[in-house]
Length: 448
Image (cartoon, rainbow, N blue to C red; front, side, top):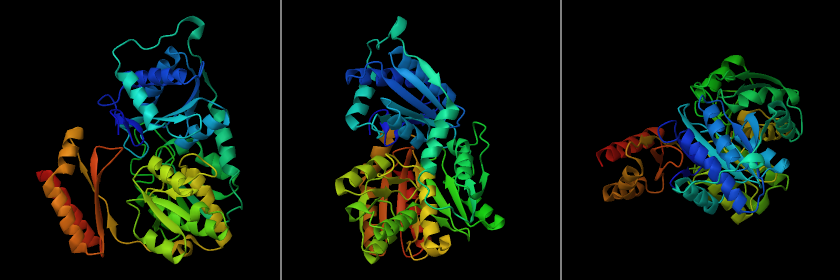
C-alpha cells in the first residue's frame, strides 16, 4: 500500500485524513498522468455514492481535473461498477468513483479506473502520489485549454441498467426483497428489477447523506433476513454502499455469503462448460469449506490475498473467469472488469431459475466451517499497525494456536486495506471456540 492509495483507492475520514484539498490534488495529478501517457484533453467520468461528503469531493476532484485540462462527465449517483462499465463503453480515458463502499458515512474515498475499466496499476498510483506531494505548482491550463464539465444522470443510469438487464436469461417467478443500503443502488435497483419483470420490493433506498450502510446493506444483513422471513419472500439481495457487493438471503432467512455464491456459480458454470481455468479464485479469508466443496465437485480453488485487485490478478494468472470474496464481491471477467453486486444478483437469478429449486436447496450442500473475524481498531496509524504485526509475542501466539487447532481450524491475522483495523480470522470446530481464540488475540493486541 502507498501513502494515499490502499487496496481500494484513497480512503479516509472526511476532513481528517481525506479532504477537498487532497481530492483537488488527486484530480490535478490524475489529469497530469493522463497527459504524460499521451491523452490530449483527456475525458474522465465521475460517479459517486450518497454520502454527505460525496458532493464536496466530487466538486474538488472535478476542479482539479479541469484545472489541468481534462474534461469531466458527471455520472451522478451510480454504483462503482457503473463507472467502470461506462468508462469502457463510451471511450473515456479514466473513471473515478467517490465512495468508501461498505464503510460508515463519515468515511469516503476516491477510486480510479483506467480506460480499460480496471483499477490503476501500482506504478500509476505511485506516480499520482508523487505528483500530489510535489512542492512545485501543478499544471494549470488557461483559456480554452481548461477542462469542460457535462452531466446527464438519467442517460448514464439508463445505459447501465440496460446493460445489467441484458444479462438476464429467464424471468424469475418468485418474490424478491432488495436492500439498497441507502447507497448507490437506491438509484438503480428499482429500475433494474422492474426491467426484469419480476415481483420485488425495495428497502433502505431513501439516502439522506448519513444513513448509508447504517443498520442495512450487506454488512448488516440481519435487517434483510428479518424482512425476508416476515414478508415471506423467496429470496433477498443486499448490496453495500457502492453496490459492488451482494449478499443473498434464502427463503428461510439464512445468509448466503460470497463464498457460497462462488461455489454455486462455479458448479453451474462448470456444468455449462463455461468455467475457464478449471476453477475459481477466492481469498485467504474464504471459508475452508470452499476447498472441500471444490474437491467434491471437481473444480480447482485458488486463494489470493484479500482485495478485489488481488483476486483479479490471480484470475488472470490462472486463466479463470470467476472469482470473489466472502464479502460478496464477485467478479465475472467475461462480462465485467470489476465486481458488481447487481450483476451478481442477475446472474444468481439465472442459476436459481435454471435449477428450479429454492435458494436453500441450491446452497444446502455447500459446507461452511465456523468462522469469526473481529477487528482491532488502530489509533496510531501505520506505525502502530507495524509494531503489532511484527511483535514476537503475537507471532508466537499465532504459531501456538495453529498447533493447538491441529488441522481442525486456522488463524489468520492481517491489517485491513480499507479501514484502520487489524482483522483476526479464526476457524475452529465450533463458533464458541473460534470466538474465544479471536477475543484472546484482541486482548493480546491491546497489551502490545
